Image 1 (cartoon, helix red, strand yellow):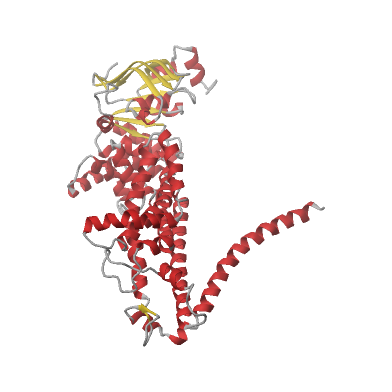
Image 2 (cartoon, chains in turn orange, green; image 1 turned 60 degrees about the vertical axis):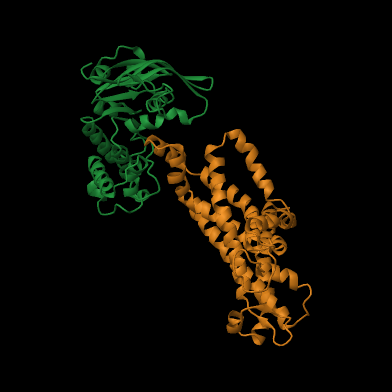
Amino acid sequence: MNRRIKEKIIEGFFFLNGIIVIGILVGIFVILVRNAWPAFHDVSVGDMIKWPSWNPDAYTTPTYGILPMLMSTLMVTLGSLAVAVPVGIGAAAYLSDVADPRVREIAKPIVEILAGIPSVVLGFLGIVLVGPMICKLTGRYNGLNAVNGSILLAVMALPTIISLSEDALGSVPRSYEEASMALGANKWQTVIQVKIPAAASGILAACMLGMGRAIGETMTVLMATGNAAEFPGSFLGPVKTMTATIAIELGEVAYHTTHYYMLFVVGLMLFIITFFVNLAADVFFHKHTRAR
Amino acid sequence: MDNKIRMKAENVDFFYGRQQALKGIHLDIASNAVTAIIGPSGCGKSTFIRLLNRMHELVPNAVLTGRILLDGKDIIAPDVDAVDLRRRVGMVFQKPNPFPKSIFENVAYGLQINGMKDKGKIEERVIESLKKAALWDEVKHRLHDSALGMSGGQQQRLCIARCLAIEPEVILFDEPCASLDPISTHKVEALILELKKDYTIVIVTHNMQQAARVSDYTGFFYMGEMVEFGRTEVMFTRPRDKRTEDYITGRFG
């Protein structure tokens, strides 16, 4: 066979693979939009926002307020970031600057293995371990709440944050470190005031990817947060996130009802949120790699 | 020697792991003078200058024997804090390495980490340092712009200003002009000559003309040993050692 034709075929093969990925993304978006669309005939956007609760099985008038679950998702996500970001950056700084190289060689793969723990296992730990601990500490009788979900999601987001932040810190030019040390800074000052700011865009990208993971996570929050379809009162109250709502209800909902379409609206929102979070992460990441 | 001795290396051996980089170095560094260290690539000159403020400690497996004295006190001794030492012995690197911060923050950084809190005082010192580094007129209207937007020569003078801000006594220049154009090089050299009134200066350079232009004393390093040391004008006109003569006449290097 002619070499040029061969080249063309190989090129076409890789092009096709790239296109498939984009096609899947667009396809998912189209399916979500098509299934969500009829909901807007039945329920106005104003009502979706105004209704204080998500109660599709109500005897008289079902309500489809999306704010409670949006709020729940936000609370659990931000709560998890509040835990995972400081711990993650601290751990990354430890691995990249404090740890003995031998320790790092062992610790980093372990952190990455942590990412492989099935979410249902973490959810289980939420029920049997974190929940009872929260009960003991707060004196409540139910430990399945937003805090529980936040802690578990933090555990899920940590590997991403640690691993990518460590890479970002490791790619800070050595000359910055030398300049700082030569000015009489100690290791600690150098890490906090020079290395972390220099790696900021990479660390930010890491946190955004961790956040993307937390927003989309389903099984863990479904098991650990209590799933009360009401407006979340506090971090210690039960919440029902967008992902949990879809997972619980989509399997049992009657086909082509308002409820069914509304679940796709929720899915569409989730898709858009994670899309933009990941996009932001990507932008920060490129800023980071370009800055070098 | 006419000037008072400020720093002194006594019988210094230095190893990276098992590989010996410096052998039995004896060197006196005079106060308020420029001491140049020249030699071909890999001769140990950069390795040596980094010992003078213990930057070699950032490299794992570095082993140093012998003594390095600053005002008669051994700075390698375990009871000497490297952080304190580096505040007295500043360093300017081969490649300009300003932090990815603003021009102002770059100079203020050293002051802040040394515990200076008074904003007015910091500003005063920043301006003074930029003036001393002959950079003030070029940057006074853009102190809060990123330092990375400056030219290479300006960046290097910023690094000098940053170093001056913490008021060191000795300044080490590790090939400060290696990545600069001739005009910037000229500015940095003029600055070094100006600075020697107030500071003790050591400069490593692979550029012999530069050593001849700026230094009072020169040491020639070759393969980890110091072959010859003396007043610069003597060394460049009447070298005693054959290797020195070969090097400065351009027969190798």
